[in-house]
Length: 119
Image (cartoon, rainbow, N blue to C red; front, side, top):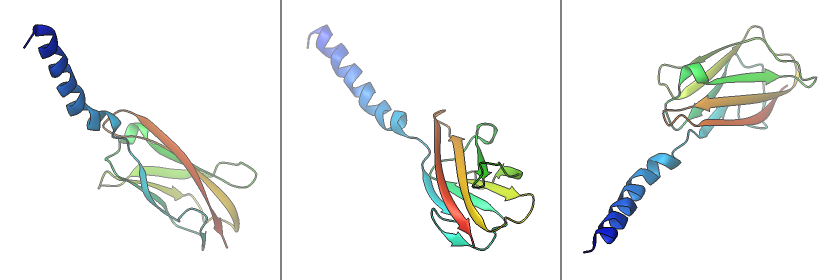
């Protein structure tokens, strides 16, 4: 086998082996409250991901209909997969938007939003 073909075969093999890792990102698996849910005032907002999170680079923000950010304590749970926001006080009736960002071990930042209503 010529040298150029050996190099091409080796490069292709390495690309295939690295492919799944390069494409792995943290994705939101579930949220409590769920997207578009109508709930009683939650004590916590929990977002579970498919990969372990880097706590220093992961967080969430909750805003009301006026765009005012609520005071939250945000942590990553012991399982390393769940981002938890605990409001400083009970949420009043109305609509809320959750904006989140996370970084997992692959160092890629992922972000998203969802909303829920307190009845």
